[in-house]
Length: 201
Image (tube, rainbow, N blue to C red; front, side):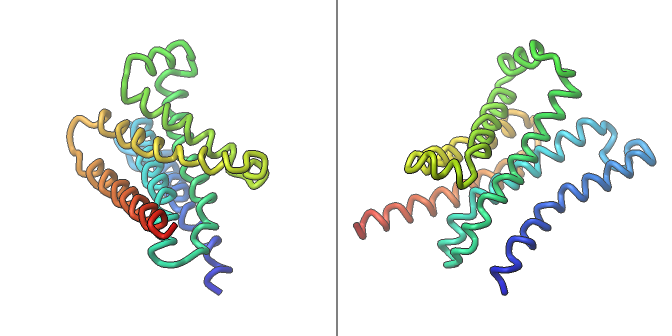
């Protein structure tokens, strides 16, 4: 019963940020500043960025949680969680590209070169794009053992995203601290699991 409904429940939970965003946009259409704040574009950008970070960390947590709770069915939700995270991060980048650089690719390149936090964010997005594109079973069969090594690049995407947020912040670092501790906890669990496996072998 739990396995049957796990994915639909997870998908519904992951859709919640999008549902709330649609509601916020509706409020904004009724009265400026009522849904996304005084600057709607900035509010939209930050909303997508924050939920992209949370979803990325959720995807990063699937494997450790499945080990700790001895729930193999969680592994089956790793792909859908990762794709939701990628969608949010891609939407975050799209809002920046459309509204801040107005689809001017030369201006976009200049922003990436001159602003380190944008460089980090776009680097994380590129890694996530590669992981999303190769997340299917077809690519897993084509790449064989290389697929697993490729998808370990998530270990690079997560710290890049956290550093992007850290350099972006001018004050109020509590969320960066929470995200960093979350990522470190999941990283430590992985290291301990690898050591345990190596000791058994």
